[in-house]
Length: 106
Image 1: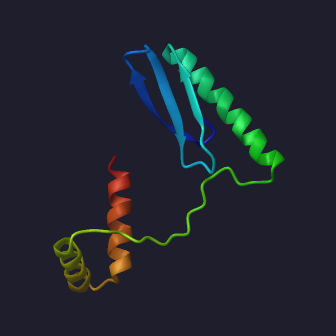
Image 2: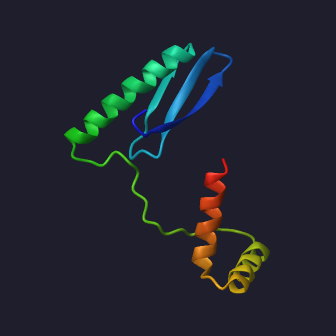
């Protein structure tokens, strides 16, 4: 919906679909008992969210700096550094390429 995505879960106990927006500055939650209700709820909550962001003069997307601080195993880190050196690229380039490749294969 308007470039926004959500994660959906089904609560079997309450027999309801629950959703939450991802990649947004503020939390977005919605739900419905049917897929149609869920879609309408998502559409409405996104419209309200975008209206509120515009009223507050805020960018609706969660800001990202482009800087990562990852915690990975020392061995994986070592292998990645070696691979970057063998490939003749910067370590950051190797990590960025790996992430982009993973995202494009899903």
